[in-house]
Amino acid sequence: MKKNYPLQAEGKHPDRVLEAVKHDIRKYFKRERNRDVPKGVDFWDFDCKVGLTADTAEVVRVSGVIEAVDAAAKAGASSVYVEILSKHGVRVLRHNVDSGDEEMGDDLSATH
Image (cartoon, rainbow, N blue to C red; front, side):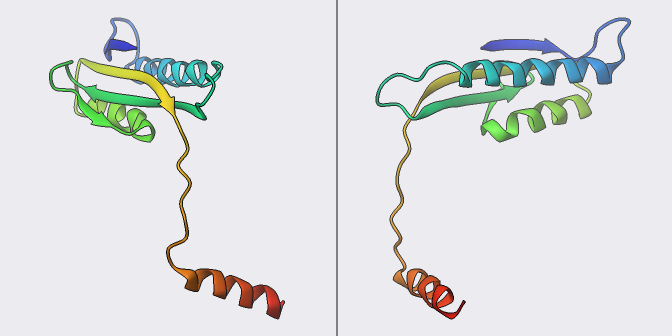
């Protein structure tokens, strides 16, 4: 999704327009996450950009999209550009580097 959202609409309160924009973004994330994932893929991941225009849009994390739109609205922008592109995500398992944590966990379970 590559979309330029107006933050000011004639005859509508700016807070309601902002809420509608955020609702549309959340709805897009939900719709994309509910799609079936292909074989070998664990989840849907997203590349996100938010800015005043497509040229000035900055990369943000998925959790920061709504906050970036809020920041643009608080700055008094008349519109905000949002780009969300879905991609395949594969989980990477992490190995415990510090064996001291495992020993502490064993000690706690033995004392209780």
